[in-house]
Image 1: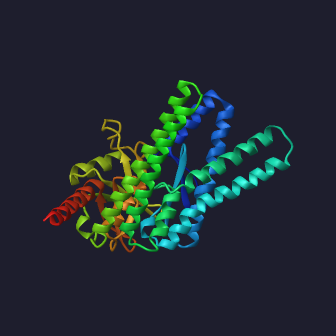
Image 2: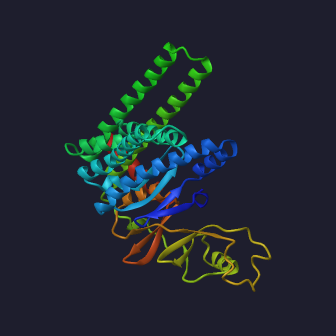
Image 3: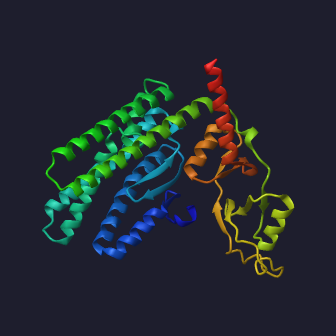
Length: 361
């Protein structure tokens, strides 16, 4: 669904992407209520500024950031936090909640100073959203900011895998307490049954989402621990087609038939691009007279790349962040191959199974 998640701008050269679910939500809100649409715009601004603070802290410390992506109820700065030292992980993770607190207090002061009216109401919404965003993210839930702050603290004393285990354990305890607290609140409150059911549903859904995220982080930590010394060289495939200039659909289909691969790459715009989807062949598309400039019938995405000397976990993490099933491998500035998600997952699964077998013995 990357093609439906538009890039709406850049910050320090880092793309800012609006997730397709956010786009649909804003269209839906505009259709049913203009005030609701403006509230979502405010939420969007709050989340964007929160994420930009993470990105700016990483940028100033020369930490690469893949992109900023904004979801309906949150966002993410795609930073390889696993490769950070504990101090940097702590500071980058804390930057977002601190920024939200600062913005919240600033809007709170403005709401007190300004006279009443619609402007004051909107400023109060800014105040509440930023304070709630900060509080929610400072709770040591993993993989939210608070959880990463806690792991950064633990990493000052323990190895990465141990710090992650302790953070996940703390996060799971908070999740259990949160669910119990929700059930107790619903039991003693005097609200209607419908309202209680709604609160329980939302809170349990959120708790399960956090639990799932913490579990994924633990799995990633195990993968990193057991693949950190494995080079990516054995995973590189040459099974792709590279066009160094624009090509017509006829030229692309001829190459696919000749080389028996559906991985089609283009070189240009300072990097490499991959065709995400080709239309079904038809007489018009395969017309020999079709100009190579008429290539709007296929959609190209920027191909993420990784250096030849990186490790297996680096490639795995890169694919997690970019959400694409393939990455390019470069030596210097030259593309020397590709790695597919299917091949990478199979390799990691087999390697982890071998380790489990040896440990069992």
